[in-house]
Length: 60
Image (cartoon, rainbow, N blue to C red; front, side, top):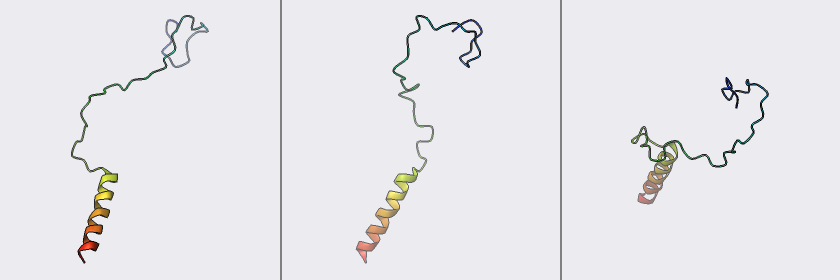
């Protein structure tokens, strides 16, 4: 990348000589806590609703 090139494709026509291609993109914060730890997950909520209906059907 040349001077003034912000990675948006607006730089000069320099070649990327000697650049090392990035082949592995790690997660930016692998140990970051969940921002909403008690928020209901739609998939888990749906499974628990189906489970409750199954328990109610078995109780009849």
